[in-house]
Image (cartoon, rainbow, N blue to C red; front, side):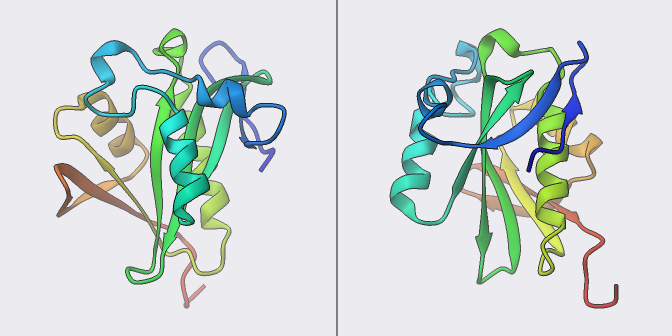
Length: 162
């Protein structure tokens, strides 16, 4: 999981486990006010979902070892897909190119799993920034909706024929 990519400023972007040393910093990650219709007001909500729901696994996003975001992943037994959710980049870090490298790192991490043939996520139809980011990374809307959000999927190279 320590594989790194870089943001536009050249900072090393890493996904890290949430642990005793960083959980408070991850919990305090907050989006810009105008994004609160798309994501939780604090990443703490996603940490609680991971801790209490038994489905999601939370990860911190760091830039040069400083927590700047949160993302989580899960596996859906019924649908046979891995899911990305709860992505929040701190308001002060918006526009620095953190999100793309973080999602790419998570895609690589999940795609290494032998049963990973598809990675899914959702985004609100009014969240144009997310829609453009995910499209650039290869996610394609499936035509399905989860609550009021668009479901998009990415096929991975892992499959029975590889």
